[in-house]
Length: 113
Length: 110
Image (cartoon, rainbow over all chains, first blue to last red; front, side, top):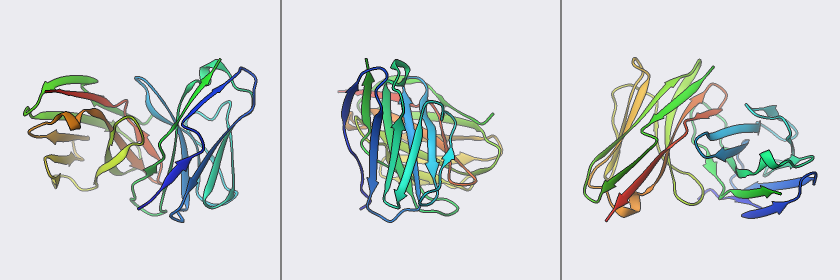
């Protein structure tokens, strides 16, 4: 079974803090993704990565950066957290190829006060 | 701009009812359409559809894709309280990116 884990289920941070969200997958997947999920908006793609040290912007990358130093780990960084980044953050991974489903982690609910 | 629209946004049914959830899309480089179920945690994969007119079935759930009219439906028969969840539709573009709809919130009352 594919397992995608995220470092925290719940996180509370103050405005201006630097925030790290970690994601680890154990199935040697090439692709990894970071989404945020907000009511009425569904999941929106922040960044994704096809390989180690490779990253591409998704639909809403502003205010975020990512790091992928190892194949199994994909980190999302909020350089200076703001209240509008309060959200549920979901990490996913998939095999590279024409049509493969993405496997999701349990999510991190981040609150920025 | 690529978009995926799900309807209804929410619905409440009684156990035993049959429900149909809708997903329409406008995506430039379509590869496949996926359905996920999300309870209070990670979305779990239900179906992937790539060809028109071929029904995918798993127990009481089934789904079909119409690539000409650009939509898919997810049917759930004989609903149970355990079917209560958010159902997400996503379209996979070239390069493995997924574009998600806003989701349909289903509540099944006993």
